[in-house]
Amino acid sequence: MVGRQTGLSKMKILCVSDHIDPLVYSISIKQRFADVELVLSAGDLPLSYYDFIMSTLNKPLLFVFGNHNLRYMPLYTGHVDALGRGRLERQGIDAYIPTGATYIGSRARREKSLLLAGLGGSLWYNGGDNQYREFQVAFRILKLIPRLLYNRLRSLVHARLQAEVPGARAHPPVHRLGSSDFPVRADRRGQCLRSCGH
Image 1 (cartoon, rainbow, N blue to C red):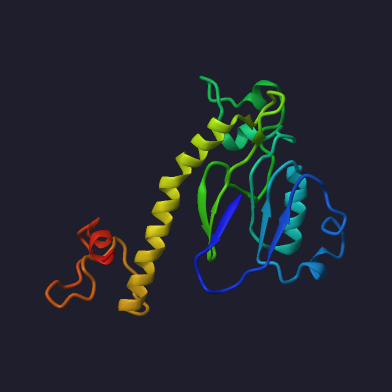
Image 2 (image 1 turned 180 degrees about the vertical axis):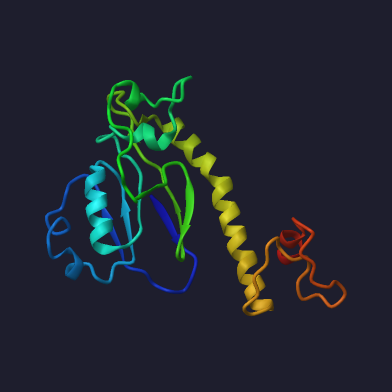
């Protein structure tokens, strides 16, 4: 996962990956990680571990799948057959595993002041599931760029809006906010990006 801080505030993040850590999976997790605001997982962990962390800390958890522990990946990636059944259902595996964690594989998401992009899996080494060659990784990254740019532009427009009119909220975006010859209008979608992007 890749993250970029877009605000000035600092945030404590708990990152987990690959192995169940006895310092995390313990009765003292709440005291040990009381100041954590966000949990990120780079994969290869069981979903029940995520549930334990989330239910104990009561903080959001974002994850991607690695190249192991892929049993429930089809539930999150939307791989279904013509009858609408996922691969797990066809194999008779319970397809409704409850977890409150948020899957961000091949997606961009803003969480608090961070802009995050999830890129799961690993580089290809034996042809297993969720392994990718260099060109495939590059393509997956390229597919994320429009969403990252959209989120970045959105945060810039939001910052500009807040600077011009403190406390203002607009949906859809306003046109040429702050210009004396153009009154605030909320019916001209798309104009905000052109006029606020001096």
